[in-house]
Image (spheres, rainbow, N blue to C red):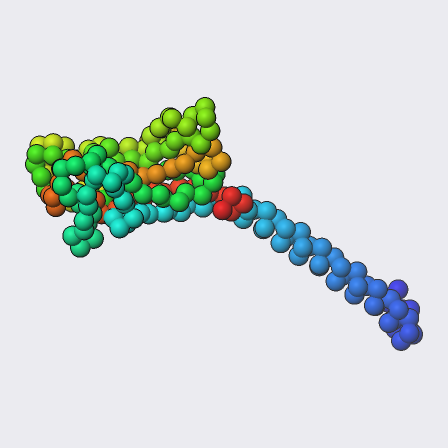
Length: 197
């Protein structure tokens, strides 16, 4: 074949052009299949992310619960109401919750920050009156006054977020009024695949 190519410039072009075209087509197929496998692989790769609610995002659950701020700390005012504060964490559908943390203040020694956790309730008649805890952190303790505390729960129940059937919220209860109990915020860690978010 090389002897024929050397004898005729026309024959050389005729053989060389199809050879180059075949080589380029093969390279394109290899590159496309590699790109497709990289794209498919990254679509199934699990990523760790987090969302947070600052104290400014926590609002009283009822109108009788008064509240105010001291710098970046939310605290309860007055003795009326339930003392519950809630925030929407905005969790994406199909996320898998792995950790929930609250940053709180307890300098009271006679009351506590309590009932902090991530909760959900159903959106359909069969489960609309049901409240389920996905995560709940321990209270700061009635006789304790730890000051700043970072409370964590990694033992998550019903960890897969299903926004089609449930609504989710973070909550905390401040047992008494005044700046001796307060809430700085909370964060939720989760994993999710690229195809889900």
